[in-house]
Length: 626
Ligand code: COA
Ligand code: AMP
Image 1: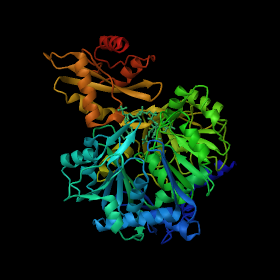
Image 2 (image 1 turned 90 degrees about the horizontal axis):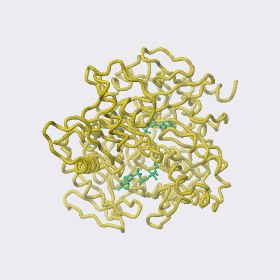
Image 3 (image 1 turned 180 degrees about the vertical axis):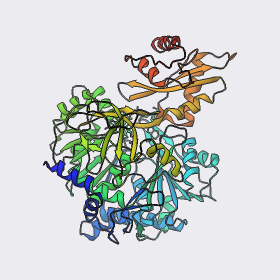
Image 4 (image 1 turned 45 degrees about the horizontal axis):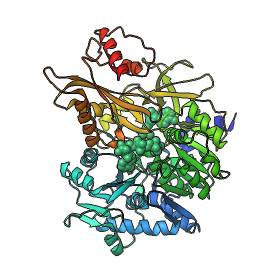
């Protein structure tokens, strides 16, 4: 049996024993004696009698082990032309003070803290400080508009919100504080305090009754110790797009998460403990949570925080410059980032200027790694390029080429095989296991391994119905795909109303709610269509209310503005077409899949349930004229 097969079988057949063994690799306050338990809802819970603190594992533990002088965090910011390195001792001391500052503001174990910050060290410190106190952080990506922030504030009910005066995008400074003020104003839940980090590029106005200046409060703060929590206590809530307008609060526990993070660094990424790990993502996404903050630090590596873009900060050599300057061992980003680089540096002229001899592997996730991008990156870097598939809900890879165990041959378009702990089946509509090569629902047999969500924040019914209800005994991922004869998994895309734009997960259902609320719009459909650079882009098709007289260009601009204001620039909603009617089934369901196939120029089958086949001709005309 191969090393992979051996590990995989153990994890599937003796999950409790397997994961209890892995749990020995982290430093518990009280070592768990039970691997797998069950909560009141009958949901699997890992290490129910273990006690730990995730911040301890990420920082203090390494200092205790005599590794305090090792670099923990490197901040590289081409947009502010600055760089800074924190050793483990320095980062621990800063985080302990941030925790003290939050405690001073009344934050205690179990309280929620919303973090709306750009890619600066204080964002990482804020997350770790919450973990230190046993408080639950909820980071909101800076590209989301106030309305999205407001929805998350109402759901999470934070006692404190932490923000910065601004974020810096390519050639522009974006003031964050007015966005936070608006979000708080629009929310029914009001935090006690808003903690504001003033950056030199922009000064935020403070409301003296509620707002607290980070630097001033830090100058008075006393360091705070790590608070022990149960393995099953939540570490964070991370909101992600579902099929409706309301995002889902994915809950991550402390113990299962820490064990899975540690395991993944060894097994999937084959990371040496003294190595440098760079996830070129954002702390607002799950990749940032797991692989900018928690996993590299729990493993004792140096993690890189990059405040910049793959291109234009200042050029498409940025990734390679960082890999060279900091001797990065493993680089992880989304395929869209490499497509952006490839577009601006097709022959790899920038790439050739840098010494990449230290780099061992490049991992990609967030969307399918398309074969041309795989080929370009492999050819130009001459490094192993590894696609791995995962979701906010799991917090780590479900399928991968686990190079720490064994390097399997790469198949273009496939994220290789299930990671030990995940038993993946492709299910047909009726719940049978599909044949090799046959497409179906990609589902994971329970128990889900450590780190996977045990619930949706304060909405267990949504967890039950959205993930567990469709096929008893399984978690449904929302992705469609197939497995080949050799057990390689091919993820073919979402089969719900979720799209992936530049590696960012967005809900078309939510965009439809915004577009549909326009007074001129009778009904609408938003679909994701193929885009060379960003993978997918949303496009809206709108039917006007009878008697409405509006110029289609003007309406399009208004709708684009509305989506930008209510969801955020990150939605990249740039097209809305007026059509006479939408193709529907006789029961009134909009045929979104067929519309998408028409838009992408794919062959499609006219569904037998269609109400009026001529509606497809109209859509075809509208889409291809646009
Ligand atoms: N704060 C505020 N605004 C933000 C933001 C942030 N953190 N991130 C993005 N935006 C804004 C951008 O400025 C842009 O605004 P604009 O329409 O006014 O220009 C808009 O949101 C769209 O951003 P994005 O989709 O990132 O497009 P881009 O053209 O700026 O960059 C890529 C394209 C491919 C370079 C970029 O998306 C990228 O690097 N993606 C990597 C993917 C990634 O990190 N995925 C996470 C999972 S691994
Ligand atoms: P997120 O929760 O934001 O990480 O997005 C998860 C979704 O991104 C998945 O459900 C997939 O649709 C998509 N995704 C992530 N990684 C991959 C991958 N390697 N291949 C195909 N799709 C992916």
